[in-house]
Length: 94
Image 1 (cartoon, rainbow, N blue to C red):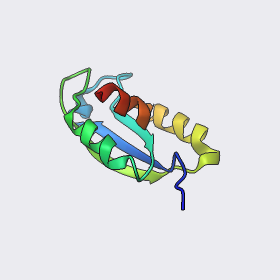
Image 2 (image 1 turned 30 degrees about the horizontal axis):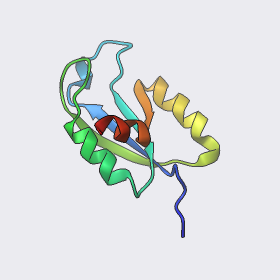
Image 3 (image 1 turned 180 degrees about the vertical axis):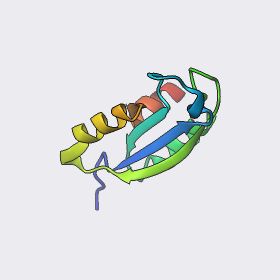
């Protein structure tokens, strides 16, 4: 059985996101799947916020339904998340 390429949203928040002024993002929403999820999490645990230098933590996960991806992108952006695909996260780790 082949898994859908995009089947999971992972939400990462900055440890100090409450101090971020508007419109600074509070974290990163990563579109991935269950296969790449552990790799994304390992990379994000080493990343720091470009605004305040604090670490990120996994704040939650949601199922990504392909017909609604654009709606999810807009929803996360309006909630002050920077939206990325897993390949963007994993390629920059190189």
